[in-house]
Amino acid sequence: MHLNRFFRSALVAGFAAMASLSAAAQDITGAGATFPFPIYAKWADAYKKETGIGLNYQSIGSGAGVKQILARTVVFGATDAPLQAEQLAKEGLVQWPQVMGALVAIVNIDGIKQGEMTFDGQTLADIYLGKIKTWNDPAIVKLNPNLKLPAAPIAVVRRSDGSGTTFVWTNYLSEVSEEWKSKVGSGTAVEWPVGVGARGNEGVAGNVAQTRNSIGYVEFAYAKQSNLTYTLLTNRTGQVLRPNRETFQAAAANAEWSKAPGYRLILTNQAGEKSWPITAATFILMHKKPQDPVAARRALDFFAWAFEKGDAMADELDFVPMPDSVVKLIKQTWANEIQVK
Image 1 (cartoon, rainbow, N blue to C red):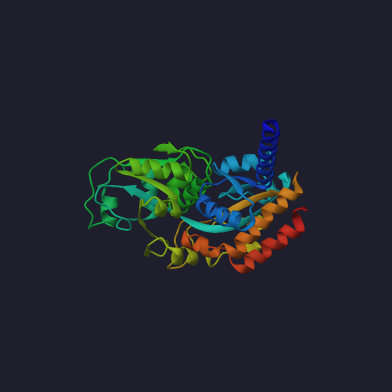
Image 2 (tube, rainbow, N blue to C red):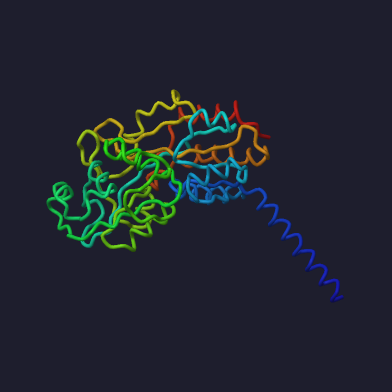
């Protein structure tokens, strides 16, 4: 009698474990950019509640995400630094933009609140070049005549890992500063003239939050979620702008995705009076011939669901959804190039 109860309990536990393993086996695996992690996490939670299928996404940086998709250890990779068409062809990859967002400068200075401080591109470049060393430097004071700025040294924080966020940030600095362009340039990893490194948007946000008189750069959602002090920014027309959906959408409005091989467009320093100057898309990478076509189909189902039902969630975090016309192009790309079941 007791033995039968034991076997029944063991059998129930075994079925529960098998069910758990089966559910885990259906989870979609991905890795890469930390920039879109807030919206991917939000989408994943809603999608699992609706479908029972989870998303196992490793927010480890764009460089690591590209390495993982090339090694086929995940179903999809995510990067903020889009690959060139030649590399996509060589590696048998398909690339598309999933959502758009923006970067902001964040600071930790006693007495300075969100949206009170203003930078322009040249000043940011000079801070990251190490030319501007203290917060009361004349260039910063000129932009912020009404703020009480300390004579303290600027603690510069930047990414330590291979980062699409760094690619976007350094691309912008290269657009606004010839000296930055010639001495440092743009890329997912660069030879930083100054600064302390931190891993991921999460690491930079945490480091700035804990370090007085510091400056860093993160995706806007991280600044909002962590209640960090983000700054205003002067765009190429001379307008001082606040980071929000309106200014991000203005920067994205003129993007001509259909003309870009592999949808490779960089949206920094766009024209337009209301265009936020450090706006960017974040991209998904998948193999044209995936090792597991069924898993690839599940991933595409998730991304299609995000395009169809995820716009409101993106808006809540101040990400910019892809236009319907671009989504239509992307779905055609999936149908023509990715072999799924």
